Image (cartoon, rainbow, N blue to C red; front, side):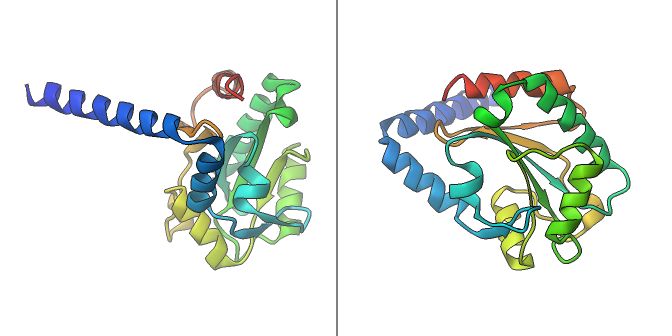
Amino acid sequence: MLRLILAVLLVSLAWAVQAQQAKLTPAEREAKARGYFTDTKLKTQADRTVRFYSDALKDKVVLINFVFTQCGDACPLITAKLVHAKKELGDVFGHEVRFVSISIDPQHDRPQDLARFAKKFDAVHPEWLFLTGEPANVEAVVQKLGAWTGDLESHSTAIIIGNVRQGRWRKIRPDAPAKAIAEQLRELAAGL
């Protein structure tokens, strides 16, 4: 009985949040998203400064994951899987969908390191951003995304996908097939 009551409460809460989101104007939704995600400045693999919300998230369905270039196991495997998901997306990738890979080791991962990492895995595309920057800035963004850990080896391998405009976000397990990742991204892009 307690589980049923808890389930009803959770469903009611989710409905209330969605209803609240629906009441916001597009400008209010954008202001709320910018306030939450922040426009923290980071650097791309091309050594270009970007603002996290305005330049990386806004107006796209995004896939966010966390990497570091000296990682010997999970990061290369997940990056390779995302390359396959990118191929599965076809023309949707780059038009409606962008990938954002954030280094959790900004003290060692400079833009040129991320560029080499991207090239090694054939993950080079203008709409696939590999981000690094000042350690405090990277930490602030990764904390907002709920993935901060002080230990590189135990960093989050979760894949986060979302549609900022709709306020729809979900986590995907890193062992999900590339085709399933692409399908979920297509579903979110259909709402643009």
